Each structure stands twice: as structure tokens, then as C-alpha cells.
Length: 432
Image 1 (tube, rainbow, N blue to C red):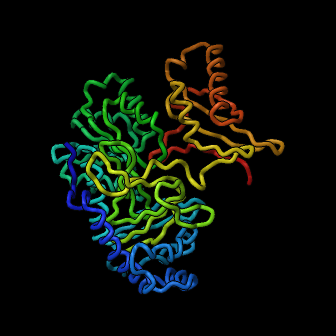
Image 2: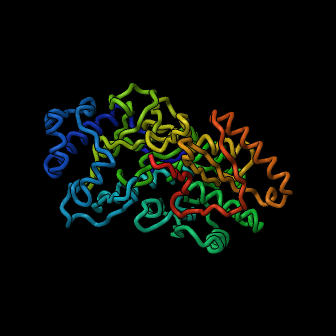
Image 3: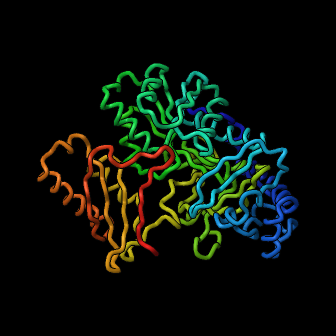
């Protein structure tokens, strides 16, 4: 039986969703025009005035916002509410040094927590659950978002943050945690640690909500099997509040976008034109209910597909597939497009843990690709001859997937540093 946190919104008719979007978009455009000189200037440069936007059908007339705009306008240039109305910031590291800082009024926080509560209820959460939040707290949005959502649902909330594995497991066992919220790489790490300590039968987990980094279907199955749970994906960005922009339901076939708060578009990353539904392209979001930091047509750089096919869970909001790479973290090695997710798929198919690091370099004007892969304790105790055989096997499998040669180095278990927020998967040493 599917449960909803706000059924009247989550299962609203298409007409109702569009009506909310039209009304809120018109209001939001006027709000940024009146309060954000930086954005008004961008609109004027494009020859658009608030009166030109009467409905979602006019959204394409508005200018895009990108990470560069956030950097240029840092720190207060995109703030749309008086400072006295703002109660919090969250922040993320920008792609090139300068931080992204997002502002929130109390109303913004309330709506964000509602979005996270929808995700927790979709994963089976109720007031009887114990929600163990191991996303980083502080400036990172993961911890505060799921923490707030968990309170909204009425779960007993354990604000663990990440790190200190012994304490994580002690609380998990002693307090009977039923829902785990963290990054997929950290979930995989906790699963390994639970197995090593023989605690599997003392863990009561039934569901996990894992986001903030890319993870494959193979990795999901792996975590589900090791922890005996159902693993749900969640998506968001600091620029649009944080996790809970979209979330997975019991169907596990993509994430429902909270369309009463965010309008999603798919564009051609090269030309910027809006693509028809079902096309693969770059995801763009407009925040239509935020007061302090309302970004319109923000380019996420995530490549994905939107679908309105009827979902078995009963929710009517558009679904986005798991991002299929990015229009910017794609590596081009020897002219070939390489996505870290492709490498992850090969590793999991071959029975390795999904902890790896990709090192790209340029030697004598030629690109080199090296993949460092952690061994399982069993492999680690094998003979050196066996290990080099396994390395050769991985080299062949990667060549088949990527079409280019990658050097493979098997390293000791747990020797690749795990990060609290996101695993550093790619080190590109080329000076391009």
C-alpha cells in the first residue's frame, strides 16, 4: 500500500499541477524582476519583461542561470528577500573554487522539509520509524534536509552526520534504526563494515535514501542485498534548496520531481533549445515557490530524460531518470567520452566493491587512463599471480565497455579515502 505525505499535492491532476505552476511562475518572475537587479539586467539583455511571461508556455523566453552567474553574483547578488527575513544559508563548493551560497527564509525551509518528508514517506517512513541520517551536516544540504524531513514525518531522528563507523553501528543496533540516509558510497562502506563485524542480524534497517552522488543500478542491487533493504534514490542541488527536488517511489524507475515547487525542462546543452518530452538532454530547473534564492532556468549540467508515463505508485508528478552523466563531468580521454558510471558498472559486474578512483593524465601528449580499484578482503589474501590475472581481466572488461585501454591497479581494502559528502572519483591531472 503506497503512502503519501501530501496526497492532495502528490496525486494532483495534470491540470491542477499546471495551474499551480502557471500562477507561481508569473508571481516569481515579477518577484525577481522587482528584487534582483542582477537578474533584471539579464532579462533586459534578452529583451524580456515580466509581462511577457503569462504561463509555463512562456518559460523558454527567460534567460538561463548557470554556475558562472552564481560565482559572479556571490555572495548577495541573487538574494531576492531582505536579509532580515533570511534565517539560514547552505553552501556547496563551486566547480572552480568560489562557493555557492544559497539563502533561506523560514518559509523556504518549511517547503524544503516538506519535499524531504515526501521522499521519506515514499520510502515507507512513518512516525514509528527511526531515521538514521549519516549525510554530512553543517553547510552541506544532505544532513539538514533529511533531518528536517524526518522531523516532519515524525520519525525518531538520529542526526549522526558521517564518520566514526563504530558509533554509527552502535546507534544503528541499539536504537533500532529502520531508515538510513547517506551517500551511496557511504552506504556501501557501512554495509561492508556491518558484514565484517557480523552485525547483519542485529540491524533492523528496511529502507535507505541515498543521493548526492551518481550510483548505478548494479550498486543499488549490491547495497540492497548486503543490507536487506530497499534503496531509494533522491536528487537535489544546493542551488534549488537541496535534496528533495525529486525522489524515488516504490516503483524505483526514476524520481518524481516536486512540480508544485520546481518546473523541469530538458534542453539541448549546445543550443539551449527546449527539447520535446522523452528527449535526452540537460536538465534545467526553475524554483517557483522560493522566496530568498529563487533561481529561474538554472542549468544543472545533469543529462537525463523526463517522462510523464503513468506511475504504479499513483503519484502524478513528472519523473526524471537517474542522471546519465553530466554535460560537464564527462571525461574525454583520447577523444572518447568516458563516464565514471560506465567504469562503476564494469567493476560491479566483475564482483568488485564500488570504491574506485579514476586517474587521467597526459604523458608525451597522449592521454593515460588509470583505474584504482579496492580489493575485497578475500581477493587481498590471494597470491600476487592471481591478483595480476584479475587486473588483466578488468583491463579487458573496461576495454570492451569504453573502447580504450585503461591501466588497472588493485589496491588494499579501504585504502581509497572515503569522503563524508561525496567520493572523489576522478582525478584529472591533465592541464587542459
